[in-house]
Amino acid sequence: MSDRRKYPNPREEDIYAGDRRVSRPDSALPDWHIPDAKYRPIPIAWFAAAFLLQLTLLTVVFIVLSAQSGWITIALSSLITGAIGMWTWERGMKDTGAGWKIATALVLAAQLAFVCLGASARL
Image (cartoon, rainbow, N blue to C red; front, top):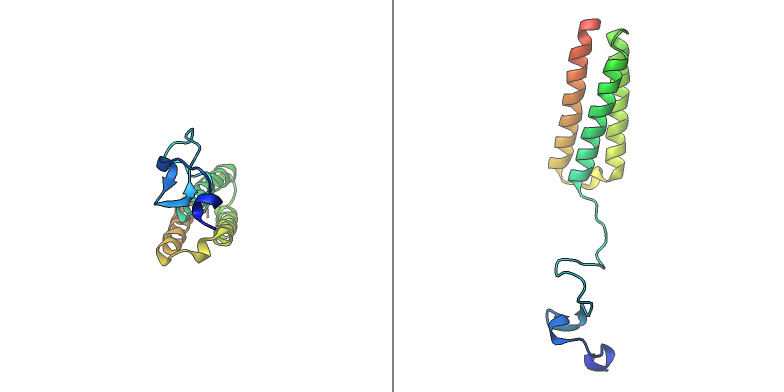
């Protein structure tokens, strides 16, 4: 069966890459819109989510526990950081390149280090 009978009457300008099977007969869609694409998560989204979530939670913990011993703040912040790290790895960071893994681990460790430094005055 020829392409002409199988895929009838696409306009010439709707045919993509010379293949009649790949045509966009709906002219209401802009050229850049690909309706049949699927969502593919990217490492920057996981990295940013981990960074922002840790930043928010550690700030809240530091402020709420400011009258308590620094050890409590450090312990709770470490648990939160570990949980965020595990969550990020399970979301897909474990399958990314080494650069993303290293950057994520360094950022999580750096933010935890700042909290530990601040809480060390209360030890």
